[in-house]
Length: 136
Length: 136
DNA sequence: CTTTCTGCAAACTCTTTGCACTCGT
DNA sequence: ACGAGTGCAAAGAGTTTGCAGAAAG
Image (cartoon, rainbow over all chains, first blue to last red; front, top):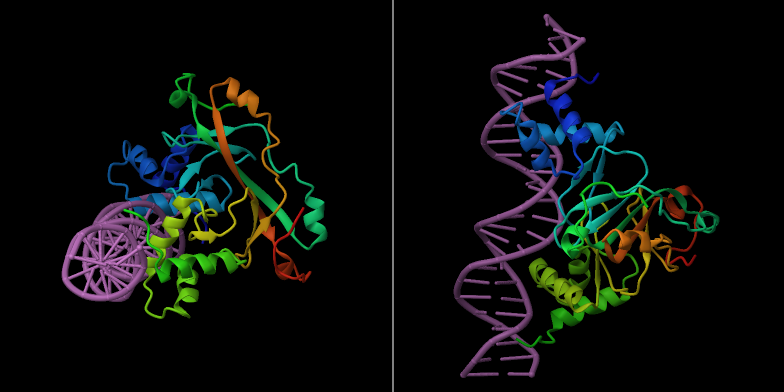
């Protein structure tokens, strides 16, 4: 049952490592296909799933949109542009500065959280800025 | 083009108003069907969409799970049990106590946010508590 | 060699939609 | 009566899976 280091897996890993735009499975496939033209979408899904389960990638599903994949696994939040759909990483933790202890006292075990901010990104408001990660 | 007050729409509204568990479309249909046995899933979807667009309901899509509908439209966050899938409303705002002005200065217009906490609920940790909304 | 992985295509799940008919207004 | 809404069934979109052959170890 040991995991094999196939070229497809390596390629998916590389795409995710280099991607800054939270690509969808179809986009990952497209990029992998530049080097492995016969790669199938099924294989891409299988390898993405593998990486997610191994903790080497994160699946980001904003609202009901298609799944996007993020090579960043450190704890960070997202800004989602409601006009162009771009997903930007927010470096600083904005996480629940909630008093989680209150929940815990009520029997809830909080393991993690997910926070997304919605609005318009610089490119879409006209305030052009180089695209990329934004640190708060 | 005015919206008609059909019994199906009224029933969907009522189900959402009385529901405390963020039912899926299929669950809404099931409950509506208790009074209107021939209601179709398509109609339920159409009416749910109508309510969401009218601002009378909220579609909650946690990660990649099926859409759930919430009659609550005030601003609140969610706790998602990773074991049983239950979604609980969190009354207090835990929103981004982020300095949104920093984002704004960079050209991001933040309109709203969505926060979900993930973990195990009281029923699933063994620490039984009456099910329902939890205020922090 | 053995076992996992791949490509392909079909299956699946959730959601949306076209159509003829129904029912509010 | 007019036309929005309905039930049904079929179509879509995204994702998963079964299988025979390919390839990693």
